[in-house]
Image 1 (cartoon, rainbow, N blue to C red):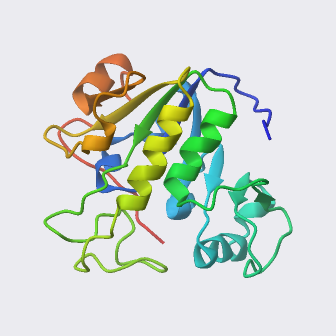
Image 2 (tube, rainbow, N blue to C red; image 1 turned 180 degrees about the horizontal axis):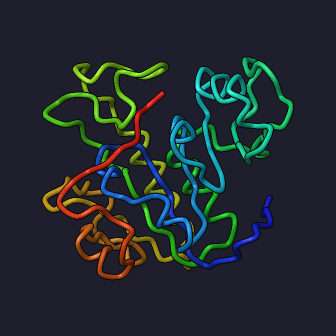
Length: 213
């Protein structure tokens, strides 16, 4: 399944869509490694690989014409409106988009993988997603989404790929699930620490997002 990319790099960045991800300066990040993004990220940024397993979401991406010029991956599903230019995982995990993207990055052979926007918890019990209140997403005042499956899938991936170093980048005080504590090849760092390692790749003292379509 391994794909060739013009920018060969041992480092990968896997982007979930939890709101902590808004700390990232995505255009600056792109020169630092290979980027794996999920779902509606395509509306404002072009990752190297876009992963979307929800049928409504992949159909939106197809309808937008994004699959004609970009690498888009999904699970086999009869509900996909057009299979032209869409890549299908075979075998597939049957997982959510974020953990699937993380697994896919591991399969591509990266030695160090940074994880962003895997927030798990809602914000004050409410839906935590960059694209809340937009097409194909829940409302920002909806209840937080259950994250147990995402968490178990993430844990399984990290423990399976023992030779990969995983770094989850979080805001100060962010929730760290018990399942992600004490794993030898997983480290949790703050955006302040990440910005010291990757100058210019984060926004200082603010979050940012382009206008969402």
